[in-house]
Length: 342
Ligand SMILES: C[S@@+](CC[C@H](N)C(=O)[O-])C[C@H]1O[C@@H](n2cnc3c(N)ncnc32)[C@H](O)[C@@H]1O
Image (cartoon, rainbow, N blue to C red; front, side, top):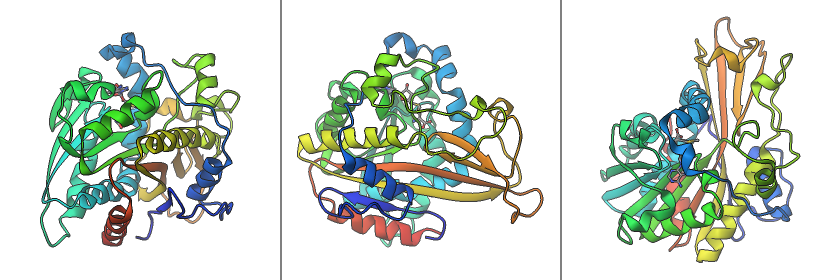
């Protein structure tokens, strides 16, 4: 594993020695998580927001950014999803995607997950079902259904899935949404099941989050900088880490309440490309090192890069939630998947 970085905090113990760490994203998050005192995290997602046009307006920038960073994103997150599948320990794995948007997981991430799993001596069959609150999910290449992640038990029997996957969706659940979604994921997961959630975005206060809700989220007063909010210079700034830490802490708390095990990791991928496919309005000038760092777009000039090359870096966090089992087999699976990575 050369360019992807995974560092994990386990409950209890692993890395949890209160050491501020060496400045890597995982260490910073671990420090923020153990500092305590952050308020509960919730966010409103009114029913009226689910109209397709509204969905496009809310998520089209985010999805364009995600597509532009797909290479480093997949490099960063695919081993985490593959490890979750491996940790289940079955030859046939039922995987449920919640908050799947328009099918990003099965379109963009799944092929690499399957490739990583194909290096195992015993083949693993993965059956994917994509779901979302909106019918944009019906564009997914996999089987798909319109399902609210807070009401999975209305649609699926207890223990029906082995892995539940969420990409950038847990912060959108409305009052007690994180708790409801984790409880529901636990309900539909089998005994050896794992819920994996990847986080890289936070709410944009200019859009649809009220000041009161920002306060609930614990991020009121934290400057949330977007690429277009500073017309002169956009640099990597660690503005959103605290919000991510609040979400991680909330997931941790809800998992503990269930009696389950939780682990948080920092993931990173780096890829060099010749073309930056980002909407022009997100940048006022183009530099050659562009990063998507926990929801913040930043760019800088890297003089070591050959002409015409652009370095893309993705950084995010991954939460592993194991409602019914401890983390040992999961840690082993992460080791295997990370060492398999090309
Ligand atoms: C930021 S988008 C991410 C979409 C997709 N996972 C991706 O990575 O491209 C968040 C998605 O979560 C969905 N969502 C929010 N709350 C939900 C809920 N309670 N149940 C199911 N989906 C939900 C939204 O409709 C939206 O598609």
